[in-house]
Length: 329
Figure 1 (spheres, helix red, strand yellow):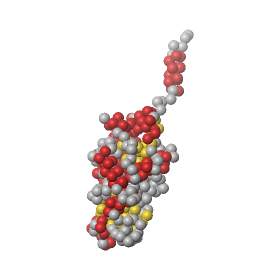
Figure 2 (figure 1 turned 90 degrees about the vertical axis):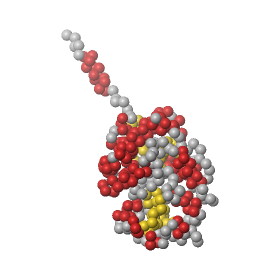
Figure 3 (figure 1 turned 180 degrees about the vertical axis):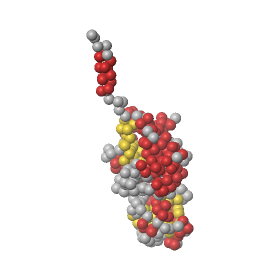
Figure 4 (figure 1 turned 90 degrees about the horizontal axis):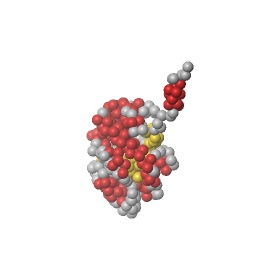
């Protein structure tokens, strides 16, 4: 008797051996270690927003020795998070970094000083020792000092720059009068270490008119000529921004998702929840599309360095709305 089920069985087996529709791989390099500063991406991963867009996303934490520009130049990532001063400085040196999205609307950067140092305003910086981050993070500080006309070489009338590690020890042990801090991280480390807000003077870069854009998404410009890559970035930005808006609306849950993804085990629930609350203030007001006015303000600040500007010429082609127009509209 002819087996009427045989063709169906063969067909079923054939289907079973077919590979599932492959997702597109995307590797994201963070600017720093796993923390709520990057909550939107971890939320998008945890909630399946990347899966929904047909993406297999790998998030690579950063660290003290990780420069996103170097990583993407070496082929270690498809998209990186970087501060615009660093990205534009790298671009001027020949790396074709292009901003495709800007989830952070406001800057969280500050200079935090001990009140007993005698500093009450930027005019009091002269003769003081200021802690500054490097690896591309020094550019906003250098731009600010240039605007103030304060040399940073330790000469008379200038300041002494202390190369600050990624902690706040210099202000705690008296090695520096001020240190670089972020609203969402190091400032609170100082408070947790025992100094009170009343013992500190804080200068927000936003308030000083020298705020520059932070934590934008950057890719190599030449790759945007590839339609398939461009499409994957459209889907990546759409899913990432969905993650960011969820994180803004659900900060405590977002912080816990970050903790679940912290392989180092170094982060704490209290610190991450507090950080997420501060981060939400910086991403508020951005739908992911770069505001050209913010870009122009950043560029003007970087060009205004007198004889030592961060960049020396007006950048061309450093950002595009192509990705966010397709992703968000």
